[in-house]
Length: 346
Ligand code: MG
Image: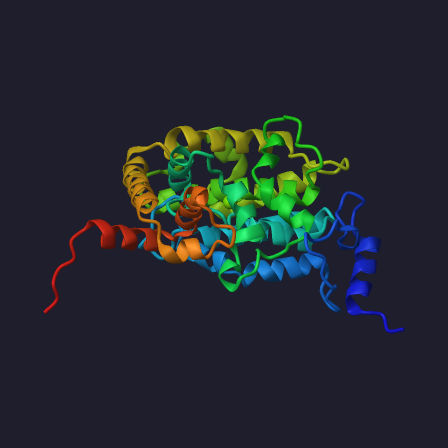
């Protein structure tokens, strides 16, 4: 009997990875069982499915913090995702966790993110009668929304990737010394920490680029530990996680941990609410609100036809999915088309 490449790879995982790692061969499987691939493990297939999804491609035109950036060097939700992937893979590989699972979770973690970053998320949460959270929406994208136009239901990912996506904001337990959710995988914890490492460093870098922040305004003790540039900061934080996690548990070296928490607090208390960012956020939220009210009264036919289980009650669910899936650019264009007069062209 021929031994498949995937089987060799799974055996290699068993031999090489840490006892804390989630092995592909031990996956709890997919919602709809499928025949295994001869070459790729289940987590490698999930990673590939996410990369080829439409929701993944839309990340390129979704805001990170700076709205629909015209400058080529500001982060978008796509480049943020790729930075999270890079950081998470490095940590995962050194700790001998499952790098493929880590990569798949990191690539998929923000698929449900709204246009206009967290401003869009907050607006949808206020508008929706059932609430809105981007992690839950990311799971909805991979479970239901992706492929719906083709009459299929989602990407049929493995339990471990789906759970990692759903829990991707819950690894902050490590930052705050709180008990972590039960059954969260080490790979999901690593993605969660890598998300924080990525956004802290690139939001500072982008804010400096936008001239709304100077490095010497940041807490000086944290900067003296982490470094001044994004590169130094990522390096110190990644080392802090790897070197703190030697006892069969994910931890961060204490002075690095304190510096991360201090910088994160600074961003949430001082940078994100600062006037230049808040001004644009208010405008973005207004766009989301007006589009929501308009589409609730005038639901687009093709959106409703996409839903095989459509009932009158599900209009709101479909409109929220439609708005959450929009890129910044699409939302701005829709707003312009619906609410602003267009000039006559001769
Ligand atoms: Mg993220």
